[in-house]
Image 1 (spheres, rainbow, N blue to C red):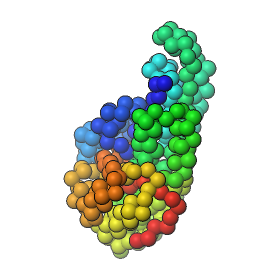
Image 2 (image 1 turned 90 degrees about the vertical axis):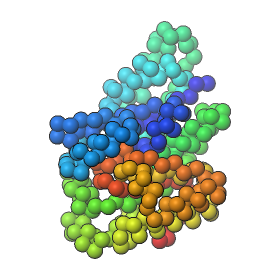
Image 3 (image 1 turned 30 degrees about the vertical axis):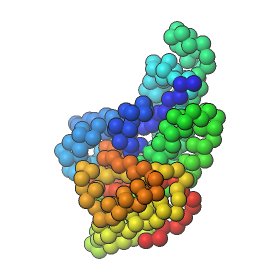
Image 4 (image 1 turned 60 degrees about the vertical axis):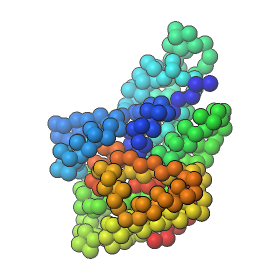
Amino acid sequence: MRIGIVVDSACDLPADFIREHRLVLLPITVRIGEAVLADHREEDATLNFLDTHVAERGAEAETIPFSVNQIRDLFLQHLVIDYDHVFCLTITKTRSPIHDNALQASFAILNEYRPIRQAAGHNSPFALRVLDSQNLFAAQAVTAVEAVRLRDAGVGVAQMREQLEQLAGNVHGYMITRDLYYMRARARHKGDRSVGLFTAALGSALDIKPVLHGYRGETAPVAKIKGFDNAVQRLFDFVGQRVANGLLTPVVCMSYGGPLDELRALPGYATLRETCQAHGVTLLETVMSLTGMVNVGKGAVTVGFADQPHAFDS
């Protein structure tokens, strides 16, 4: 059976991983004033857009996910012919309409695919499953990596669906941002009052960085640490401890809102990489999606991995 895997461009995976494993992207378009870029996870294009636009007016950006009709057209024009079963893994539905758009499109796709497949010489049925990753950015990528592993191992679609649904509820995402003022401006532009002016001002004045935890569709601060470098090191140390204790899948995904050389120079990074290597865990790193950067600002770090329930111990 030909199994396809679809992700949206907020899923922070390296471009070479996406190409090698034939993942299909639902691009998210970013508009800042007159400047428009569809995010196809091209690192150079993202960094160029970041340098010229995000730092200046990123908080005012409009992010435009694939619509119901665009998703329907992508499937009916290509995917129902190229594959027999497709898993569509989306950013958490609590933060984006992509999941609901894909779910709505799926009804039309399943009603309309038969003559298209038959014209292409395929008489077997087509099926698709839309799965909510329940997380963001690098954490969203963890479920996609497992989907690739299961597919390449020849696991059947029913077992894949069961394991991916279970895994999504056990992925932990952590994020540290550099600029709380930017986060407040972005949240205010979107009508989200979760980052208040007083909190942003106090945090910036004292150089306090919250550690945000994404889990099962919810995002909340779990620690407040003085200094960005110090907060990142303590996060990387914590992730290393979880790796040493044993993860549910052998991968840690990481993204950074800027050039990867800056990520690799952060304190604690080298030790975390060594810990992953020592325990047979793959560390996948990538430039953060453009969508991610306009929402959380330049220089943010996100980390994702699958693990048992735990408390952040900084």
